[in-house]
Image (cartoon, rainbow, N blue to C red):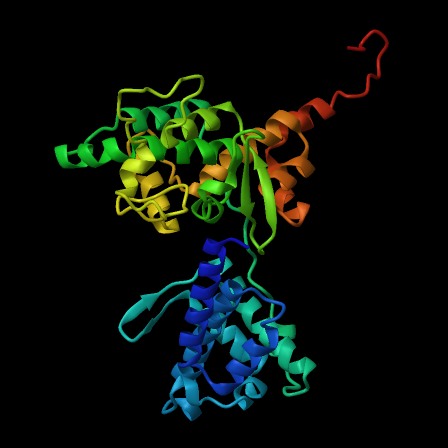
Length: 366
């Protein structure tokens, strides 16, 4: 496991511990019980969703209105009824807590119920709670979202925006000159491999193999994998890293700094492939902001994120090959059904061809 992956894991563990300080003791028991089978990032998400449920109990149940969340007893789980859960689902549509408004859509509600269901199952299994009101509750129907991708013309426009950005101040142009090669390499890597933003952020210099043209990445779940990249990515990376092919080292001239070295500002110990203007590893959020910056420069009403660039690659690969298993493997989906859910709906052309795959009349064979 890479140093970056270990750092992210540590951050999630610390975030979970901080959250648990505001939670009842039975929640600490639960998260300790699932620690060996659930990633810290997943646990942190569960913890936030369960905290929302405990907020609801205090806000809606007169018996507990004077309690702090961390004072709630385990018996509150036993006391819940299916009607209470229905009320909780309605509550999630809109509520105000400590002056902040909250709204939850279908997917957010489904996720929160899933977090609760896992906790109930845990305590049912340990015979600490015999009740499970969720078994009688209909889960929210989550509608499939339209897959947003860039078409070929928009991809060209996006890359042109990196080379010739619009609506920039002189100060912004100065910074852009420093980051242009890096940004081009990042966008090319997204569009040419479909890797996740967390995978790209975690890349070290040593994770790039130019001989085999592969990235070594840590997939979701912690598994190591190798992603092949094409010549466009190779060229963009070589320029960013200052790797010049078939060129002899000058004898009497000082070798110019590569774009990455210019960003490092002398911080030669930084291992990250993609670095910020501060000379350290780019965070996931910084990469997301960078992608958004360029996408606002092109003529599209689509909300483009690194995940949408991943979808653009997955869509193109599926249209080119028609092989859903290959797409699942390249994108790092553990379950091909996940891939089918997102990409198989775009096979209209294949379905149209399937309508005439068998010839019925004589002389109609193709």
